Image (cartoon, rainbow, N blue to C red; front, top):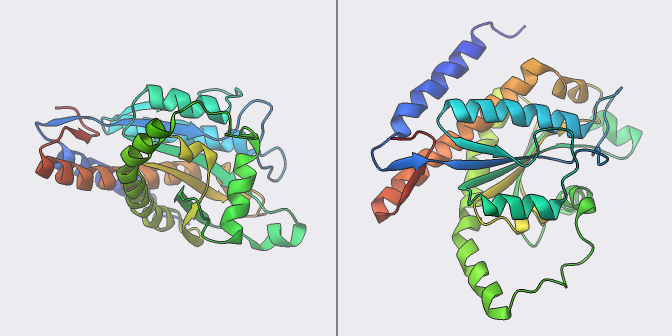
Length: 269
């Protein structure tokens, strides 16, 4: 049985981080949380009536509460069970000029045998090449709602090159964000560690800031699936992701302060 002191210890850890990352030059970090799927797009299905779209939204709402409590300026791509296309999510997010983007999903396996034995958490950042066949399969499933072709984009060659250069540092920071979140996610939930992965996710490809996609567990697993639907476990997930975000912002603030650039931190001056 988990210790009743666990939620208190987690809260104290967050409160300890907040003053450390506060500073006179800070502005609140603007964070976009993207609950996967929604509306007619239910995503993966778990035991009973468990659906990925519902689990993703529930965890995202809890994550928003924790990040706002730490002083963040937080927005959700959807706050209800509504259908929002991947293209709309990317465009809306960029319109808000975010400092961070976090997409929340739940994983699944296609066969009964694989569903019975596959569980654990994965944290992804964007790459043209996937870490392996399993990572590519996850990206293919989550990209199923993406436009069939990107050939119709109207950007000029020069504009595309400039955008690509502007995203270079954001891509490096996406890796840093993933590695800040993932070990805390494993430690906070004691879920199976399936590692930090890379894959070509559509929703990450157009966002102009450090961006990660978190697969919070396998909703298709007979034990982990129901666990994802429990409020107390969702709290652990949200708390662990928050700790990772705060740690990332703390380190980023130090780096940007040394450069003399405007600093984004979760606490306003």
